[in-house]
Image 1 (cartoon, rainbow, N blue to C red):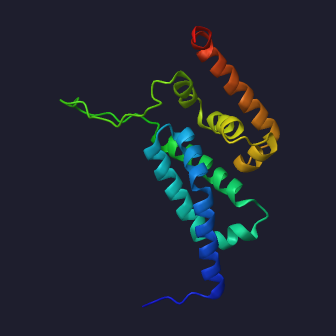
Image 2: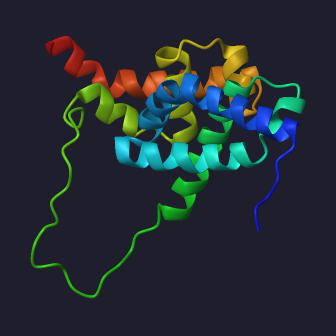
Image 3: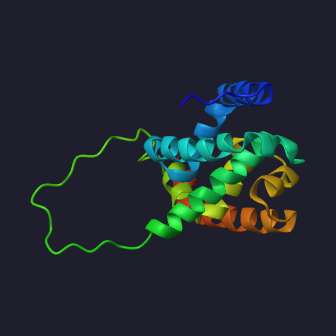
Length: 172
């Protein structure tokens, strides 16, 4: 059976397609900074865009900027995924062969390593502030927190980064 779409549904799909085309590179960069690797970033963006796309009309009816809504959804999905999977998975025996993993060109970059070690919420604030160039108010809206929370999370993150990178930056 073929579903017949109304004119509003066709327009909403076209509008969502345009939104994805325009914002996908930025969302992938943001997700990469959140997750630490491009593969998990692509998975995260895809799952969030699927959810947003299925209710695009409702997103447009809300009094919210769609890109901010998408960033907040990415941050929330990342934190949820991190909480679900952060537990150790014990195995009965060690594998005979170490599995080969893809090479991340930023893996040995000190700033990137220090950023990946931040808690997810602090990492989200730092990425949105310094990588995406958002204001504290915009970050608060994107993450669904107060501007005071953004300020405190940024302060804690910067103190941690300064502590971890202090000797590295003095050497280089």
